[in-house]
Structures are given as structure tokens and as C-alpha cells.
Image (cartoon, rainbow, N blue to C red):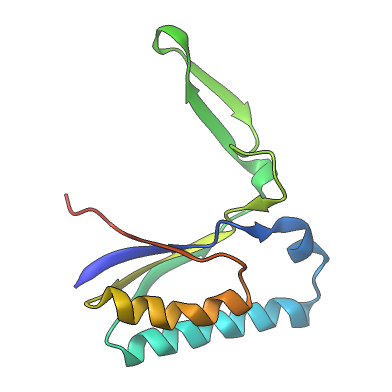
Length: 118
């Protein structure tokens, strides 16, 4: 089985914070539907997490002479931030892509990347 990360890089944090419990539940239901669709295709969600608000992030950048610059906040000044991710396993990248299409009902962008084996 190949491992993949499924990320949500364009979720709007302000929309989430303004959302109702019903809005949040609709997202959770969509995510659960994805897990079921993936399972039906022989894959599985093995891990995942929602992330805290990007205002709690710290970004580290390599500066001149290999110094490290640490700033509070996300890498990009944008309303769109990575809000969460799933680690999944699946034999068939196309089957994963097909199952993940349901996620676009709750997340405007879904990015899938294979995890490099070490």
C-alpha cells in the first residue's frame, strides 16, 4: 500500500469560525463520507487532524549566513490556510482521487501527495 497525505490548503478560517455547529457537522459528515468511499476502494484513513488557527503558527525561514528567522503567524498572509490533513493508504492513486472528490463539497481545494518512502 502507498501512503498519501490529503491536505486542505484553501479553507477560509474566518468562514469556519463564523460557521454554526450545523455547518461544522456538514463538514464532518463529508469527511466521514470520504473515509467510507476510500474504504470501499480498498484504502483507509490512517491518521489526520484539524489544525489550530493560523495565528498560532510559527514560521521559520533560513536567513543570511544560515541564520534562522522565526515569525509568528502563517507563511502566507491570506484568509486561505491549511486547516487540516489526513494520512491515508491506498493501492490505487486514481481510486483515492475519485473518493476524495466528495471532499470538495466542504473544502474548496483538496491536495493529495504521495508520501516518500524512506
